[in-house]
Length: 199
Image 1 (cartoon, rainbow, N blue to C red):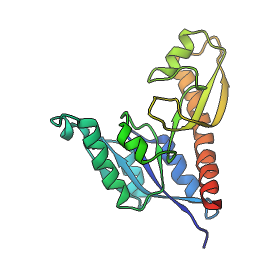
Image 2: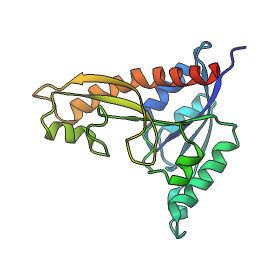
Image 3: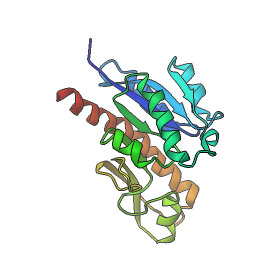
């Protein structure tokens, strides 16, 4: 049987990129398997999809940690505990709306992958699509990268471009970029996991 890298996916919403990763991993030749899907949001729609594919899920509500002095790190320690129960080797962020603490990023150094809707290093942050439009950019796209402590600044793995038409608004451009995200995220996971299995 093919050796596969064990993957956790973290989501906060519908998890459309999560769905594409799960679909890719259903291919017997794909070098990864999704072991668990976690969320900080009890109502994240993606959890139902994961359950429908018989993938284990967990919810860790960050609001339950708000009375801790260092609530972000306390949440991340609980998250780490939850993930390590499943012998996970790689974490994929798929619309996980939490900034991760230094403690967590150090713990999972070069083992957390994220996807961002711009051609990094351009347009970091939560409003990347709007920022590209406001700047009058002619080209945008998406980037997969390893997560580092500085937001959207870790080593780039793959990128895909889309042309921005003069009539594009935020919704149209977001959809164009999302279509490319769905292409490159599974390819990125394949590339990273292939490398892990070769070492």
